[in-house]
Image 1 (cartoon, rainbow, N blue to C red):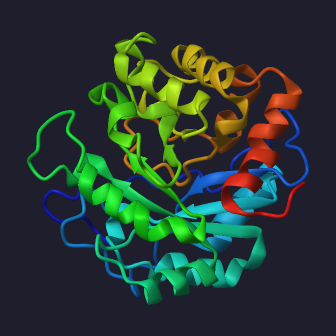
Image 2: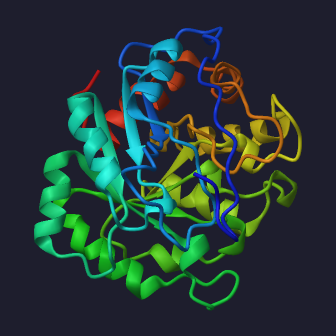
Length: 300
């Protein structure tokens, strides 16, 4: 399916990556991946910003098998809006080895939340990059986010925010009274040339230390100013691990939509982990123990 105006087509991922050079521990979890398509059955949102190729559950399971990863978290991609049909179908097929993070309406009702929870959903995602509604750089829709957090709190869900932390120096203030923990993707989704001292990144570190937030080690190509192995990302990964090794998880970001430049090999991306988390015990926490706690998997 070709992209329409304003929704350029994405390159497909490498469907045959090499195995990583280090062994993932038993029950390791990929905490951020997307299932997309088939486009012939599931239409994209008309206001999407990209048009992906079909990237189906059997394709993704083959990736996990090559990497040696046993568990996964499927995250609703923006191209479907609040229609979680593809996500829910994949969760039904995958069974208890996978969990989900859905996108819901601001006014989502209890019946919808209950059905999502029963299907394996354990969090709600909000793409703040797209929903600031003209408020301008560095302004969160705080009241809407707080109301949504209140609706999901009873089920033990978290709120996953896609935002650039360097735009939000007031994160601690904005999230101070939230009834749920908040998860930030792509190591805070801040270009590395903004620097470790960026106020928003320091705020993220403090939120992690306080146990109020989590960081996902995902998509280094989205924040790096260089090519693989993205050496400029390492100091940010180390800062997050040093701040709160129990509040960090890892994800492949498969199928790497909207990548600019060469499509990465998932084996190469996996092999960044030992540099990001050199301590084997901390790496096991990031890959096994922390995901089990955040997403409700049985402990390893």
